[in-house]
Length: 143
Image 1 (cartoon, rainbow, N blue to C red):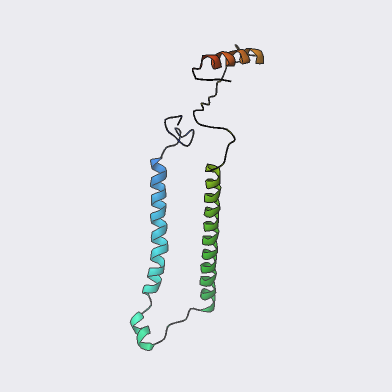
Image 2: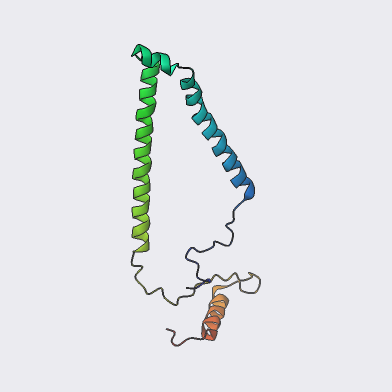
């Protein structure tokens, strides 16, 4: 493969930023603690032994029960939407990997050349330079 075996072009500018990783880790930790500990504290206020002895559970009030139901349903809907989106993305990626480009891409080299306007102002000068460069490229056959 050209480019040192890289599959994705122009990856030399991509890097991992330590500050972003640290912030993301901190945000994950804080949200996990908040959303994990709040329900635990709420249920710790209920005296489970007394409730089991009485044989009855306090049913949630109408408003909190509806809110909890709405949150659960919306969470399920968002999860299904994310799974469908991920599935469609994977399907599109699979199709992109298996598309026939219409030519044999093996042993193909592509390059971009930026020419100074002062030396190569016209298209004729550029065409002559490009032809000279093509003639200098070694290879078994050129059309």
